[in-house]
View 1: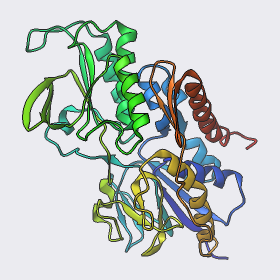
View 2 (view 1 turned 30 degrees about the vertical axis):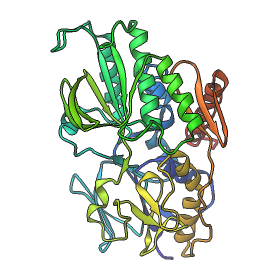
View 3 (view 1 turned 90 degrees about the vertical axis):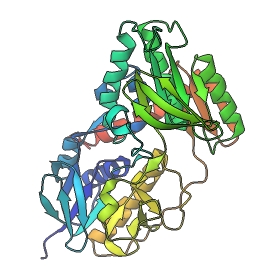
Length: 394
């Protein structure tokens, strides 16, 4: 009898959590499983904004990876992949360790556009990779509870600048404002949260109705919005911005960089097809069109036939069952038989950190407490599914 195929899962994102759950709970061909994860737990991105203002403890938003891998019969390597050597069928780790594979799947999320902007690496906080949210919470708490300080202009106050007016930027601006308000009321213009967006308006690509409702909610929280404002440099004490052809300094004690998705560095040396932004190309089976042993899902991949698919966690969740079916078929020596079709519409609920949620479903836009209740219910149900999968009776 031939040895079981060696399946290596790189990353423990939404899609791979589901693959691990299925390996633990469903019948499948024999497999030798290795999981490579940068951390021993995976934070759930949908609950990170709530975590940042103290609405959740760390353990409430995390899935422990080790027990899930153990239940699936695999081994966990806590480390970071630096290269996928597809010609040798090896994953190379930053530690120098090499892990051979028969099949490999990548689910490591994305990085952030503009990280090469001067000062970002040195001074800005980020939430990608998602584990960076832990360090960001510490910075938010430190700033929220810090005594008033003098700025270089001689004005006392706290200011946080959120760079990027997409859904993540809106949620993080609200989260920081709530963290500030829980510590003490904001007292001056310099004791504030400012949201910067390079484009015409926040929430680009969303409807005018959602944009207007979001702007109303933000301004009602005292959050300043500046559109058509590009950050050209980040410093320890603020940012340099460019608006209407003129540059100026904007003091800030905290800068959070949450612009759009960029391809992870892991793919820079990969000799398999990528799109023009560097994301790994996959077909409808979530497999590389040029390599039947290479799979991927989530924000780190681009669908060859649907390049317009947004980078959002909801797509990774919907891709997960297709990835599982494709991997199970490959483990059995069969061709994938299930195709992924991205949904045209999806329910979006933004956490506005005030006990309400901003919900968008098709043409409906609602800003209410029941929207927050629905989000809470969906998020906790998602996490419970993977925690229960590690139990003895799963």
